[in-house]
Amino acid sequence: MIKISRLADYAVVTLADLAQQKTPVSAVVVAGQTRLPEPTVAKVLKLLAKAGLVQSIRGANGGYRLKKSPAQIDVAQIVTAIEGPVSLTACVEGSADICDYQKHCTVKGRWDDVHRALREALESVTLADMMARPKCCSQIKKRDKRP
Amino acid sequence: MIKISRLADYAVVTLADLAQQKTPVSAVVVAGQTRLPEPTVAKVLKLLAKAGLVQSIRGANGGYRLKKSPAQIDVAQIVTAIEGPVSLTACVEGSADICDYQKHCTVKGRWDDVHRALREALESVTLADMMARPKCCSQIKKRDKRP
DNA sequence: TCAATCCGGACTAAAAACGTACGATTTAAA
DNA sequence: TTTAAATCGTACGTTTTTAGTCCGGATTGA
Image (cartoon, rainbow over all chains, first blue to last red; front, side):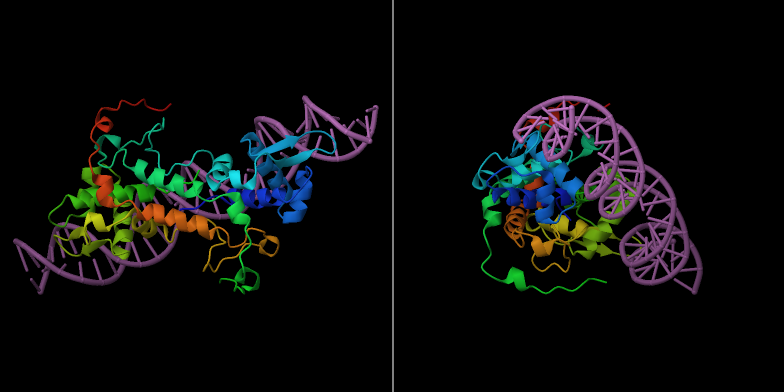
């Protein structure tokens, strides 16, 4: 299935946590609040900082804080920060990559439309959207373990 | 990066090839025409048949043919046939799966919007769209081999 | 100075994807 | 009726990707 990595999922949770902080918080604190493993949170925050979504403050009392408002951060940015550019296949415009079958490929260059639609979809949902509290349900959902 | 599997990519090429055939063709023939590895093509065709996108005809002179017109087959169907239901994370409505952090997760259930946008994006492009010849470029694009 | 904190890369282990192979089943044609 | 051409289902080994961990170095406030 098409999916994003767990790390990108964590990134959203991490950013949502940061969005609720007034002062910079360390990776350890974020891990504690989100219950995510510390080293992994640290890794995610590093990637987010590199991508410019959060600001890192070094030294004692340092930590991270959002660099933009939640409404300015969309899912595409988050995913890109963690996993690199969104691209479904190797055969994407501008890609330096090339598949071996290109010579005989009849759909050459035709993934671009899909790719564009996907990117727009991811850009249409912001962090603020994802933080909006659902009115009900989620809290009371009962789940089974699968076999 | 968000990406689909190579198998799904092959599926598109395979379907595009089938779309140009008048009579049923075997997996071996499709492999020859597309230059894709035979066993892999066979696997892809099996999956496509199970999903109802192609019709399989067993026995001598058997093979596969499209069950719908290229305009009726969208990318979402193809990807779903190969990789199963499109879902970005475990935390999707209706999923039997559950992540361990759900109790403290502030974005619980909030991937659904993204998920929906993504699915619509994939449904908006059909096989017919992907087979439409680009007016120019693709054919003459020169590429380098990668190192 | 000292302690807290980020930085960057390297490394290991686990999971998924890929490609392949094989025996069973079906069916058209000889 | 026999034979050959196909698909079907499953199982397996390898490769690739992802997740998670760790450590030494750099930065900064107290």
